[in-house]
Image (cartoon, rainbow, N blue to C red; front, side, top):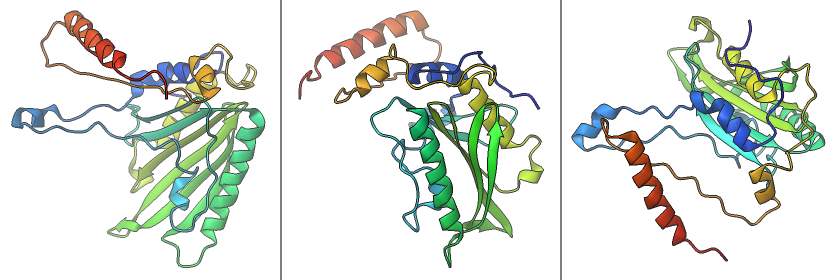
Length: 257
């Protein structure tokens, strides 16, 4: 089955490009009905970029490969309408050698986890992953801690590399056989959207033109700000007022350590 997202010819070479390609799928939907009762609903959180790869195998035994530090990176919780499960994605732009090495280390950690006695993360199923130019490993872990009514809670994770791109896509399902379209189809679609057409060369690493790449050459602080206004307001005017308020706030921040 073809990926569900558009596939650019070239792979993304910056965190900004990754964000742009996945922006329309970002899961920031919250229940606004509770706002009328004075309650604020948090936007779903994405996985921390510092967590080890294949994190579902890691917490109990201290196993796992740590992702690269000081490189352009992206994390987000995505929704693909054709797939019922949310996709937790993380991307890093590093060297091809580092990306391949971390994929191998993540696989070894998952293999060690599956062999641990009395593990709450049992029934690990490891397989090679090779789709749309990405090469890595897919792990499915039955998390017995969350099992209900004899239906295991299955955490599935793909860790893969394409050139200097390193990716992890995770999703949780109770019974994958009941889903109209497998979440792995959505995961492959996300990887293809970021990695580009496999007929094109794999990226050699971060583009020197990337703003985040320049900041990674590192001690720079980056701030992400978002604001929202009530429904029915003039969007252009609200954007103008919000931008002015944010500019004033940023001007108050220290520019040196």
